[in-house]
Image 1 (cartoon, rainbow, N blue to C red):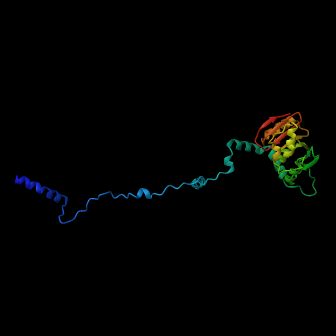
Image 2 (cartoon, rainbow, N blue to C red):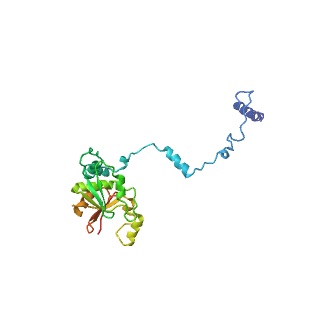
Image 3 (tube, rainbow, N blue to C red):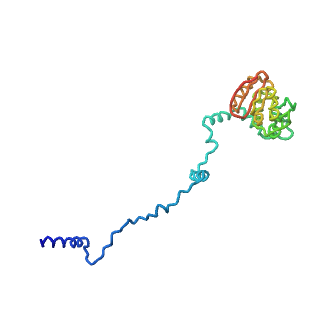
Length: 250
């Protein structure tokens, strides 16, 4: 019995001796709680809410600096069409209008003469002479006498048509059309569009003396400059520089 009691008394001292192999030194006490700071979740700032504009500017700043030329934005099919047009009479007429003036004293022959059926004005297209502003005044509205910055490619189109059929006169049926005159025509039941290209100064109705309406329509349509309207009854062609489209009217 005495031996068992001695063993029970010596057991705690033996375990303490094993836990502390260096007698005489103090061991650190076990922590009562973990070392984690309980205030940490409360110290995290709330996420910043950005506006749509700020998000857009941030996304824009991260985009790569890539610049595309206008040629890259044109489809390959349209590039081929423009390349085919390089040898058309349209560009030949443009070069003819842009060539230098003949020397003084020489005889000047106009490319053609434009005649406005409403204003009864005749205006010659001369090579080398500035024609953009006079052409815009020539296409003015005969009803209100207003003019606009008309597309001068129409002058090149008229010159190309005259050179194609070797005509000395091109009759202009309609050029720029003011909104007031266009509305009056619609009220009278005429075949005019509400948003006509004539209102923008990008359309002209004309005929070429000595050329049939059918042949002129086929030629202007082959240029693919823009919209082309065929009016066989009134014998004129509508041409504009908008999107390419075709139609027939009376």
